[in-house]
Amino acid sequence: MWIPFHLAVAYLTGACHLAAGLGVLFGVAPRPAAQMESLMPGLFTALVWMPRVAADPGRPGNRTEIWVSFALTAAAAVVAAATPAREQRRVRCVDIMVVMR
Image (tube, rainbow, N blue to C red; front, side, top):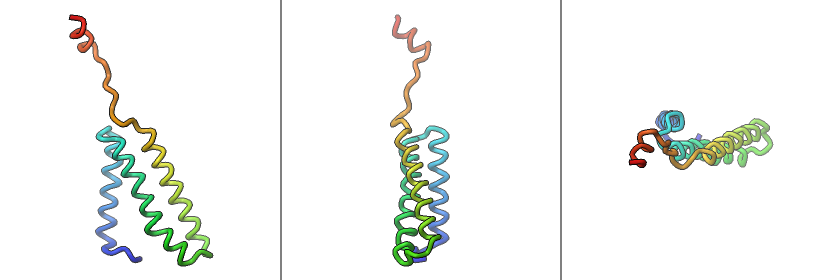
């Protein structure tokens, strides 16, 4: 592989995946977290699988992996697009009582 510092990159991307998942799960900046999650497999597709397919287009495993990676990227992009930009504020009874006074 041509990516330098393999172990450090693996730990960094793992931490980013974990942070993005927790951000979506707990609603802490859910759209940026989902966008970051869709960006990471997209970069992986572009930086890892596209050069491999270009180097050896006849190898079926490379072509399969690029389509799997593309499908995961597209699914994450759909989740990012469906995530609301910010949380909708729910109206509470206390808010209504303050307005009525």
